[in-house]
Image (cartoon, rainbow, N blue to C red; front, top):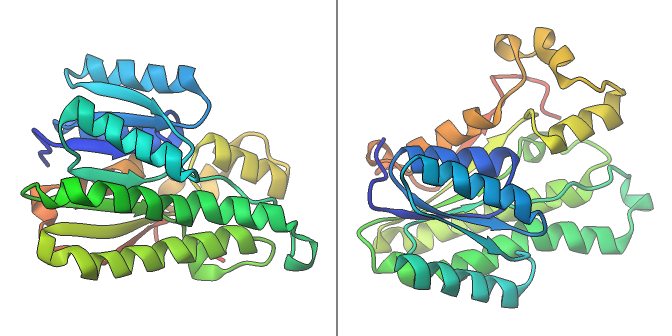
Length: 255
């Protein structure tokens, strides 16, 4: 699954799923821009890990909900690497899990702005560069939350549903420009966010205690998500666009 000679921008890639995606794309030959919002140390560690793989890497700070930040970020990546072939819209935040009646409007706006509006901003900004390349790929990291729409998570599920709507629309708009747009939707993943969610919902502090009752005997790992992304941007997936891949091990417990 070669991405040799391609340049990827992965938002929110200092840690967790984003870091795993950035490393996987580098392993496949891509140079990678590592976006982060506030944790410069984590981003620097991801950059160092990519460089150890023999690829070029760049850490670029931007809060994706800011149009000005996004413009500066994309310009910086193109100035450094010359173009952008792959965009992974991964940056995200959790909602507080409250019912609609108890949700602060500021939370709704913040979650929507990060997941959906930010992805729209960055996608719009990279399109001119992608259209000049032999192939472009945009991957939206969504969630199986948009399958079940469980109570207590309206800001998050609304944001992910909007993100998916963006992906399916963009896939149709950009197909004639050689750009593929797909959605990867994880279930529960062993990340900082996943561990916090498990603790908040169940009181369990060790997410590995869920392995026994999880599909295939383990909780999903960031690398499972990264492997789907690296496939979708590979030559083997050149005829796939406008699709959503649910990565939950076939679990029926998605909502």
